[in-house]
Image (cartoon, rainbow, N blue to C red; front, side):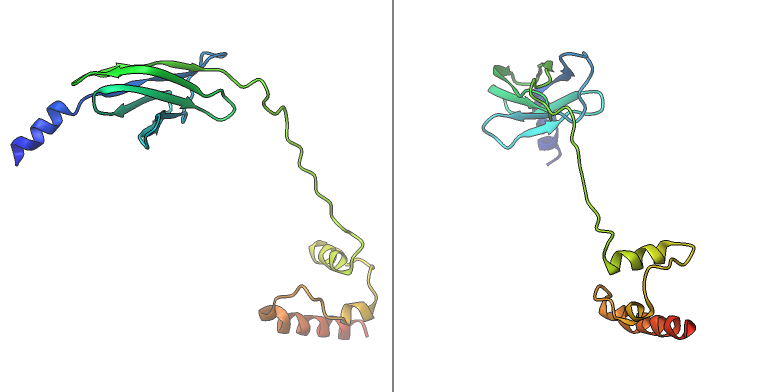
Length: 161
């Protein structure tokens, strides 16, 4: 059994390895994707842009990709028994990438709920609601908090009377 393990270690050292770089800045690309085309075999580059894929001897096409970079396929990579084939690749940034992303949002400040939220977050008590509107139940309260909120409103209403 032990001799089978040594045979597997001795003869299992073949594959493809190399480095993936940024073609413009000549800097490494960590976490770039490296995949043998037509298989589920692949890996990602490490922090230094290096990768290694152990694979059986043969001829392969390897696909290199990274977010906002062009995908590059290299065909005819020959892997020989008991050796790694080195394939270094430079990926270039896509020409049609986004310059910026703008996220906008709106808030309605003219509702009763927003005034209550503002009062809750404020250090000073604002004069924005009448006593009758404070006594009205608010529909956004969760059922488990409803009783505590009603007690609070009752105490507030009785304080101002």
